[in-house]
Each structure stands twice: as structure tokens, then as C-alpha cells.
Length: 240
Image (cartoon, rainbow, N blue to C red; front, side, top):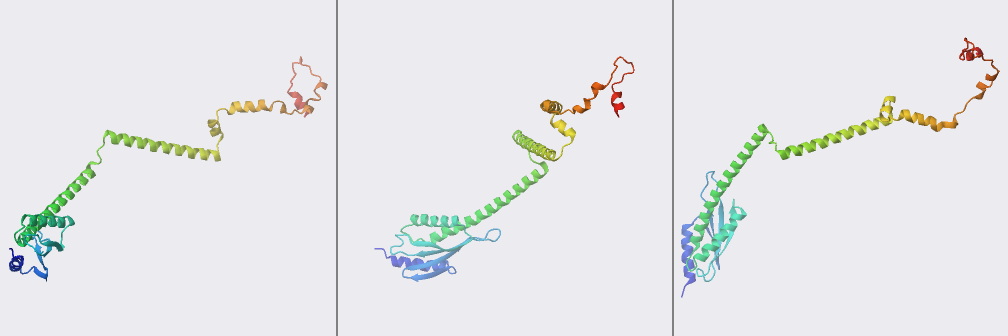
């Protein structure tokens, strides 16, 4: 019969000797402890770190221990999820054997991978910014490339703007014309003024009044139309 308590005590002593500076016992019933694991330093000296909390269950190692991320530094949420998934995988593969050292080693290797990924992400971000800067510089010197589609779009927009300006100018001229128009402008705006004047006279028709007194003595005048010196225009001057 397996003595689970004995196996757990022996493993605990071994873990404490392997991780003397990062191992901390939290409780004895049930046995619970933490181990802090850090990655190797990257090129810039940056590290990622996680503190794992383990708790023995009664039948460990035939049953996996309980674990959780007690604390962490410089890890993304996705990194934490990857570490928890890794612990689950390793625990299933090592059932029946004490596994704390195996679990911690797997996590430390994962942290080193994460540091490398951080380095790769930063290098890729740097390259992306450099490409964007180069593209912006090219556009500044080369201008925008004109295609048939972009030209037609610009042309339609330009013509629309010109039409609007023309209409606006016409409205302004019409508004100004309403306030004051010269005779020439009136004529240019209404080419029918000559015929309209005639129409006005025709419409006046019989309403034109004539002063008959101007002609009342004309019958009393003796006119000799055969006289070579006869001048009808002189009649008016004689009366004066």
C-alpha cells in the first residue's frame, strides 16, 4: 500500500533543497507551498516571473496536486493561460510519480520561450515602424499615385465644385440685379422690350386723350396749298 504522506514529505525536502531562496511553505494541513520561477534574462536584461502555488491532495502523486498562479510579473493574460495549460498537460503525463520538480522545470522553460517571444515581438514592431516611416517618406517625395479610378473621381468632384461656384455667382449677380439694373442690363435681360413698348401703346388704344382746342380754329384759316411759299409749319409760328 502506497504511503502518500511519506512520498509527499520526501519530495518536499528535495524541493526545499533545490529552491532554497524561492520556496515558501504556506500551510501543513493540507501541505501548501509556493515556488517562484523566473526566466533567464533577455538581451535587455528583462525577465518574466511567476510564483506557483501547489497544494498536495490526499492521494498525491496518484492524483495531481492543486496549482494556481500566485503572482506574476511582465506576463500577458495569454501567457498565463499557456502556463496553466502546460501544467495540466505535464500533470496528466506524470501521474503516479512525484512531479513538482517536473512541473516547475516545464514552467521555467516556458518563461524562457516567452522572453524570446517578447524579443521577437519588439523586433517585429521596430521593423514595422521602420517600414511605415519609409513608406511615409516615399509618399512625401513621390506624391499620390494617380490611377484611372482616382483621376475620374477627382474630375467628377472638381466639375461638381465648379458647377456650384458658377451657380453661386449667378445667384449673386441676380440678387444684385434685383436692387439696381442699368438700361443696358434691362435690355439684355429682356430682348422683348421694343415689342413690349409697342404692345403698351396698343393696349392704351382709345384711352389716349386729345386736346381738341388745338384744332378748333383751323377751319378759319385760309390756306392756299397751291402757293409755292405755303409752309404748314409756319402756321404755328404765326400764332405765337
